Image 1 (spheres, rainbow, N blue to C red):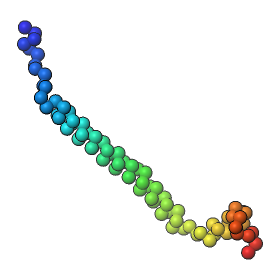
Image 2 (image 1 turned 90 degrees about the vertical axis):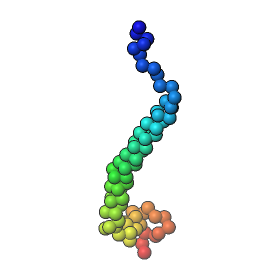
Image 3 (image 1 turned 90 degrees about the horizontal axis):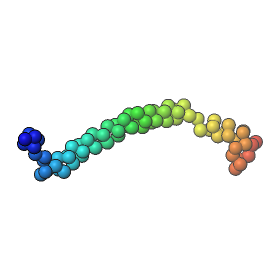
Image 4 (image 1 turned 30 degrees about the horizontal axis):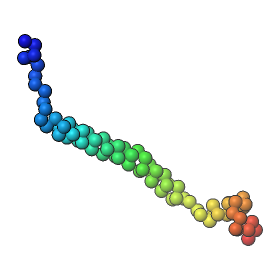
Length: 78
């Protein structure tokens, strides 16, 4: 009697239905993680580089490295 109450299992199209669900889920997760990386890591990094190079003076940095003796090819006294 209890066997008649159980629904029949779905045998046809089971793999296709599950693949469709998992492919849509994988796509949503990948787009979400890409957006989080872009706005959470890439954009702040790009802004930090822009802020750094906005006031960067390469000649001042070169003179500081030359005075510290870091550059072997540039003499200390010029």
